Every structure is written in structure tokens, then in C-alpha cells.
Length: 327
Length: 293
Image (cartoon, rainbow over all chains, first blue to last red; front, side):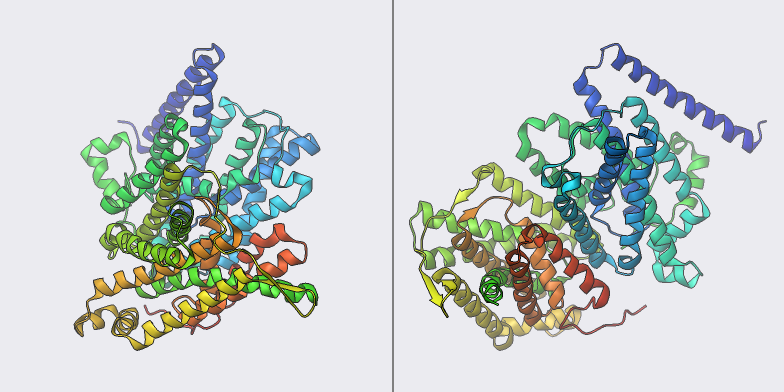
């Protein structure tokens, strides 16, 4: 009989193989021209949206803080990374890293003062910060001002986006399953009780917020280097809202939920592209209906896994995940 | 000094609009603790109803204003019944997300209905400019905005403090359960609050149409957010606070634009919001309430 450790390693190698297979098949389909650029575009969008949704889920779902300014951090990452490649001519990886770190720094700056606020007030403060970031970008002519920044080299491709999406999901799910992650979740369950147990709530709130912002910045950098141009208006309240919808529909507190929702909504929105206004009406109705009939979202706080089907691990799962999400 | 006084006049007009919208936010928040994100869009619907009445039906200003207020009051009650009542006992975040959903629905539903193009409001009131102290300009539209706003605020104060429904509203916002035990119909009271708030937003919408002459389906987003800032500034849930906050925000914005930094107008409003939230989250008129465990 294999030991627990060996089984785990085996499982992870299996997952890695499956991921490599998915990447390889799609990579060669794109290279070979079987998937036309339209499908490629949507695959790229799915990747970026997964990064955004999973990172926002860390803040909203797992930490229970309600942020609706995620697009602001994405904007910081996008502009930061674009400036590095355009003005400094440094490699793409460094640009992405700088963009993400800049967004993380903004996350700390925003998080430290505002995370003392709760619920609605925090929501409106993050919304305010998202708008302030956008307002500042509009006013800085060096980075293009209101017209946006163009001429960004197209460095992002399927390979970059696929593996960075995998990295994001891996980092965030490992974070959640770590000691720090448990502390983060305990704040969502009951902040006062968490504090009474000796958890430094401010520290963990800022930590979750910073990690979330970091990956939002990464998504921004990828976005900028796939679409050549970025405009301040791309990162407005509606973008934040789009990301929020994915998190809420997927289930606040479920990474697999966010991934499923990001894939489903990107496909839905691509297929409704021609009906610009109707797309958002459908979005809005979907959101209202889900909130009225299933406020916990598609997956709630549960994770989808193939182990779900075997009874033994299901019990384990039940123990790991606490009660339903609270306010 | 001249620029200052001129911008003060402009700021008061703009502030009246913010104050009217902020009143709805603050009343609704006071009674159900919900940030009604759809409120800015009720204001937009109000502006379109005003447009419909004046441009298509050819009505004059006052009937158009009243019609718009009545229809929006009904709209407010319908939104509350369909979207918010079922969630009254759900987590607050669920209600907040629903509110964002309703907001988007109104925006893009309106866009489907009337197309996204900007509409020009008919000139129901010919503009007359009055000169004050030599070089200051005040228009009759600005005067009308201020008069209508002050009249509506006085009416609101009368309703809240002197009538039975006002007393019920104050009681429900103080303690919902105790109010219910005293025989107050909480559901009707909440409906009435939404109706009054929405009617005020509709009035603001019609006034804005007359003042700026242009309306579009997304016009409610920014003023809605800023009116919320105004409500927070004055202390959310406090009616005089919302009025003061609205006027203050309008004046600050006019000053920022007047001194040549009009692109900084939007960020400044949000910077004010953040400062208030950090320094005095209860707002200018609010009292700090300790959270009970």
C-alpha cells in the first residue's frame, strides 16, 4: 500500500500531466490553425478572467471582505507592466512582475486604512479607490491620459496565460489551505471570535487584500500585452462588477466555483457580443435571480473535485469546510 | 474672489441635485441598512420621464416634474417589492449585489428601450441670465432648481416630522421589531420610504435635464455614486446630513472645475469619501455607535 505522501505526489503528477496535455492540445490547435483567432481570443479572456475571479474570491469569498474595486488594481498592473515594456524595454516576465508588485503595493496602501471598515462601508471605499485610480490615470498625460496607452508589444500568448492562470490558482488554493489561509477564513466566519482566538485580523485582512491585488495586477499586465492598447475606461466600475459577478455566481468561497463561473460567463458574454446592451440586461437578471434563489452561488463554499464522488473523502471535505458563508 | 462666488452659485445648483438624490439613499439606508445602488438609475429614469413628458407630450415643466415623481415613486416601490423584500433576512452582501443587479438592469434595459444616444432636453424654460454685482451670472434655471429643491426638502421635513407615516418611518428606522410590536405596518412603511426617496430622485432627474439639457441611459452612475458620497459625508441615515453633504459636495466639485482642474472632479469626490470614512465614518452629523458583540 502506498503511503499518504506517495499518493499525494502521484496525484499531483497526474494533475500536472493533465494540465500539460490540455495546454499542449490547445497550443498545437492554435499553431496549426484549427482554432481560429476568435476562439484563441476567448481562451485568453477565460484565462485572464479566471485569474481575476479567483483573486477577488480570496478577498470577497474567503476573507469575507467586500471589495468592488478590483478593476482598479488590474489597471495599475496593466499600466505598470506596459510602461516597463514600452519605456524600459525590459523582458515581459519582469514587466509582469513589476505590474503585479505595483498593484500589490497599491493593495497595501488601500488596505491598511480601509480594512478597518466593515461591510457596506468597505465596499463603497474600495469602489471609491477603484474610481480614484482610474481618475488619476486619466490625468497623467505621460501614460496616455484619457486616450489610453497604445503600441504595447503583443507578448502575451496562450502559453503565458495558461501557465500563469495555473500558477494563480495553485498559489491561492495553497494559501487558503495553509495556516495563514485558515486564519483568513476564520475572519470571514466570525471576526470577533477570530480576534478572541488571537488572530491578528488586520494583518490577515491586509494580507488577503494584497495577494488579491497582486494577481489582479498580473491579470492586468497580461491583458495589456495581449490587446496592444489599454484605456482608463476599460477598468471602470463595470469591469469590477463583471469580476464580482463571476465570484458571486461561482460561490463566494469556492475556487472551482469561480473557475467554472469565469469560463461560463466568458463564453456567454462572447456569444451575446452582438447584443451589447442585452448582454448586460441578461447579466443583471442572472445576478438578481441567483441572489434571490441561491444567495450562496453555484458552489457555495464547496470545491469541486473528483474525490467528491467517493464517500470517504466527502466526509473529510465536510470537516474541512466550515459553515455557510456569513456576512 | 469673483471666480469663487460664481462657482459657489454653480456649486449650489449642482449640490441641490446631489442633495435630492442623497436624501433617497440616506432614507433607505436608515430604514433597511441597504445601499440602494439602483437609486442613481431611478434618477435616470426620472430624467427620461421628464424628457418624454416635455418633448413628446409637450407638457410644461411642473406637470412633467410631478408625473415623473409619481411614476418613479411607483417604480421605487416595485423594485423594493420584487428585489429587496425577499432578501430582507438574507446576508447584507446578497442584498447589495442584488441592488447592483437592479442598477445594471435599469441602465441597460433603458438602453435597449431608448438607444444609448444622448438626448437633448427641450427648452421648457427659456434661459434668462441675471447679473449680480456686476459680473456674477445667475440663470433662472439655477433659481428654479434651488427653489424646487428647497420646497421639496421642506415638504420632506414636514412629512417626516409631522405626519403619521413620517412618525412610522422614524420608528421603523429606530427599531424595526419594536415598531412592529407597536402596531406599525413595517412593510408599508418601508415601501413608503422607497416611494418618497425615488420621487425625490426623479425630481433631481428632471431638474438635471433642464439644467444640462442632455440625458443618456448611463447618466445615473456617477451622480448616484457621488450622492452616496454626499450621504456618507453628512452621516448616512440622517436627513439634514444628506442635504448638507449634497450641497457641500456640489460646491467642492464646482470649485475644482472652476479653478481649471475639471478632470480631477471625480477623483476629488472619492478622495473626500475615503477621508470621511477613515476620519469620521459616522459622518459630519453622525454619532459614533459602538458595535455590540
